Length: 163
Image 1 (tube, rainbow, N blue to C red):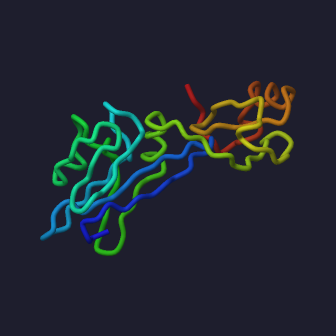
Image 2: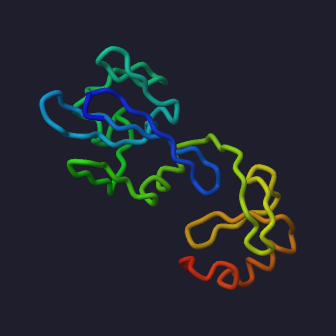
C-alpha cells in the first residue's frame, strides 16, 4: 500500500453487511496513510475510483485532493478511527470497521448459526434476528428467538451485555 494507489478491501460484518474501505499512501515521498470507508457522507456508498493519479467520487464526480483523504468533510471518504501501523503492517480493529455499517447498504448472504439449537441457516433467509453483545444473532424459529431474547447470556455467556 506504499505505492500511492487506492487499495480496496471488503470486511463482512456478522449480519452480512459488506463494509468497503480503502487505504492509500497520501504522499509520494513519505508514508502517510489515508484509511477510510469507501463512502461519502454527502453522496452515500457509491464509493471512489482512481483514474491516473486522481481519486474521484463515483456519485458526483468530484476529484479528491489525495493528501486530504483521511480527514473528514465535504466529499472526502469517511475516515476510519483507531487504526495503527508500524514498519510491517497496518491494523484496523473490527469494531472500527463495524462502526461503518450505517454507511453501506449491500448485504451478502452468509451462513450463520442459531445460538439456541446450533442449526445453520443464512442471514438473508432468517425470519428472526436480534442484536445482543454488539452482534446480530439469527434464529431458525420464533421459539428459539424468544428463548434467546429472554436469557441471551445463557446462549452466549461471553457477549458483552447491552444496556
